[in-house]
Image (cartoon, rainbow, N blue to C red; front, side, top):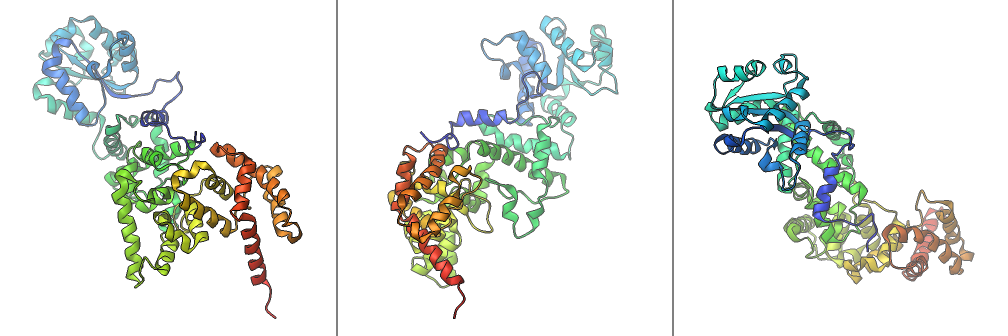
Length: 500
């Protein structure tokens, strides 16, 4: 079993997870629907059903019995829920409507939500909660039923279903609104997942607006650093409502998958199939990965492993071909030692494509795998000692024996693994560094092993590794971590001494 921080649940559970990102307290009703359609069943076939489909085609979400009710639902509770969680109510007034008990109940509910009294429905100072549609009747009939309803500006069904739907859309989605443009785009992104964004009056959009705000680093050389782990460059900022809406929609989508990543980090140690599941489970993330493969491969360099990227394999292959072409353009054979070293230096996110690339500079390859490029997005999730523990564990066998062995040696040769931070004093790196820097103590590996084992117990807990921390300590020592660190320190000390 992989540790909780890394476990990726099924796509259904992921969709439920990001639906929860827009949830509120149970005692608070959230606006879930754009419109509640109140109608008589006799009007369903010739007008109401086509209208509901026409509203859906315009990216509006209607509460409509055939779309919303399921077998076993309590009718009255479902209607109450629809009334409370809809932005407005569409009332299809017709001769059949006036004869029904349930339609009267629904209308009373809409009136009550609007202001509490029928005469308030038509008040010009009130926020419109009722949109009446007159279907096969005249003003005199409506007036006999309810003078207040007759006083409301109505839409006539005789203009046709499409025209009625357009009128409703224009009422709820005035043209030129950044929020409404963003809502429509995000609805389209969420459609394949069966997910709808909250309506634009929901406070959820305040967080989305904040996420889309221009970042101070956006116009500097640090531009890739501006959006956090699993962040991608947003569309260019603009004062144009349509372009602003496009940026806002992408920022809102990114906000969801980044929040999910914070709860269950998708990192260099996540199995490739779970990375693909993550990418395929959030609206817009697949497009972002295809558009920005360098970011995708920085966050998940394991997708560069030969043949593991599945439906993203073409994107990965194109990135690999591009990197090799860059080397060849400098007059260097990408398969030569010099060419492979070039692939380690830039772009380092492709080092797992070929173990021979790692062998040309193991330390730099390990740095690229764990830290990413200097000018690239932030990719490190865990301390280097944790990555080393994971590579030494059977949990990393999916990477392949040679690949993980070379990366493990690379972290050892890199020589910065003892400098972990923010740990309790029991296994502080200070004590270990004292032992490693004292030449007289270097032969006393038991003491070094004990200090190292204390820290690796945390790695075991983070990843739920199957091995004991003592076993992991022995494996790191066997991989040359102590000797390679000491050798590196000796070289650094010699280089710092003034020449005679």
